[in-house]
Amino acid sequence: MNKEQFIKLLEEKGITLTPLQLSQFDTYYRMLVEWNEKMNLTAITDEEEVYLKHFYDSITASFYVDVNKELTLCDVGAGAGFPSIPLKICFPTLKVTIVDSLNKRITFLQELAKALELKEVNFVHDRAETFGQKVDYREKFDLVTARAVARLSVLSELCLPLVKEGGYFVPMKAAAANDEVEKGKKALQILGGKIVEIHSFQLPLEESERNILIIQKVKPTPKKYPRKPGTPNKLPLE
Image 1 (cartoon, helix red, strand yellow):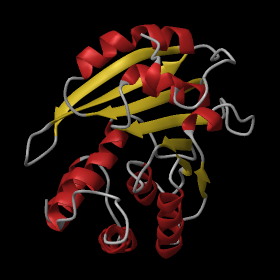
Image 2 (cartoon, rainbow, N blue to C red; image 1 turned 135 degrees about the vertical axis):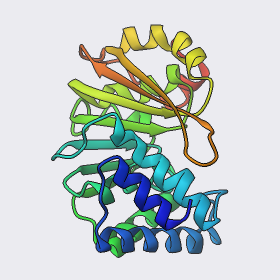
Image 3 (cartoon, rainbow, N blue to C red; image 1 turned 90 degrees about the vertical axis):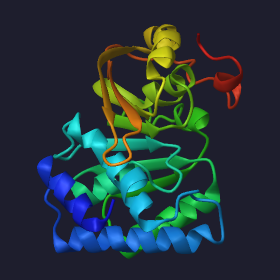
Image 4 (cartoon, rainbow, N blue to C red; image 1 turned 45 degrees about the vertical axis):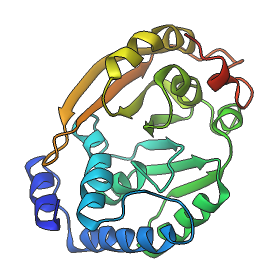
């Protein structure tokens, strides 16, 4: 996806990027490649691939969830900042918190936010399991996202405790989401979530499958979740 295609396809979805936003994406790409030489941020470094598989792919969440207002968004295990930083560039009024367990990645994201002059972006070095038990963050967010971090039964335990009642958990998945949804039903029920919609589509140009799940928080999460670090992965709620 070249930049012209990126601009055009977003315009078709009602997102018109300003020269400032385009230069932010440009800087983002440059810094991603530079830092990737020192640490493992992404296996994708070709510019057209980054624009398609990282930038555009991240923004697809906004096609199905209204993020064009002052929502609080938490991105769990954001890695190199996906999907939250591309969303923040497109929708500057979003208030973003990113949690990641690797301090080196947090350092990259802090430097990136500085270079892009992003406001109201908060970075936290922590395990999702301990982060979800902290009073300052628990059930405080309108929207919680995660992109291809873990299977749904595990991811729900890491993310739903952060969503406020009435808010949404929006996991972004590649193929085989139906199987995950089936296995994740029990976890969602225990943790207070309910699937409202599942959007399946193909990424433009390369046509690989993508699934975006819209899960509403319908009741509070029991206090014992998330469990201790490592437990959700070892003993998923299935």
